[in-house]
Length: 143
Image (cartoon, rainbow, N blue to C red; front, side, top):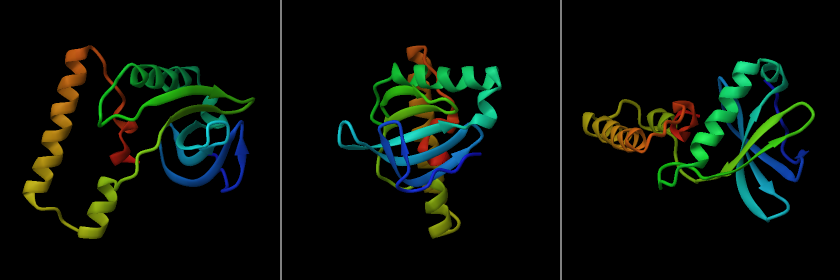
């Protein structure tokens, strides 16, 4: 994986901090210097970029998510490319991840687990009904 440092510039984005990483890249909090807003950047690193299937999945994830308008799904602003990286530029939403809640609170009560499960089920059923589907790794709770 590639690790971008705070203060580093990538196109017209200034990296603020790393938010997380998964199988398809890393997610950073960044400032859009053109629009003056905070965004999240999902970066497909050069190590994976040469895998055309992985690259197609990365772009398909962005295209699928960009068609959705839902309070629990981040808005995709654009897809960007540099000479060695592909980027998904998306809305940054403040909040706590499920993993941080578990780390802080330890074992969750059954009612909390049930609540999370019901929310996921409701939203995925809506996406399926719309004919849309998004990779589960795109959900911030998994970063």
